[in-house]
Image (cartoon, rainbow, N blue to C red; front, side):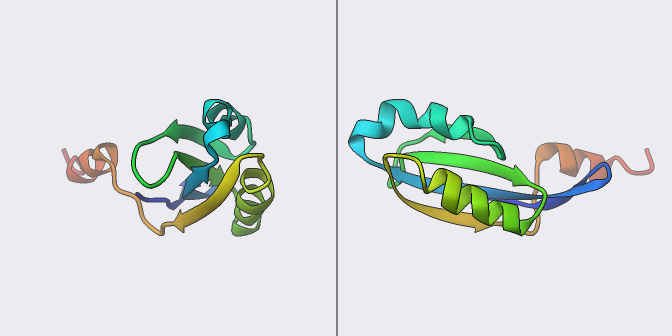
Length: 103
């Protein structure tokens, strides 16, 4: 999983992947609550050791800290989180653009 800082027009954005463990009683409602948080671009329910994955896109690290600790961590039913902030991202779109230079 990956997050990145990238240039979005005039604004640099910080992206992060947040893994979330939830209480069993919160599983049915937490996905929607996560998606409603400003800065959460996407929220997924997942299998494995974690219950949800949130993709966070914010202008700076200070706002990232607020979204993760105050907003996500403050939701009823969130037991713990693990946040990964990445410095580079790779996607098929990025790679195709790279290899099409000069065509």
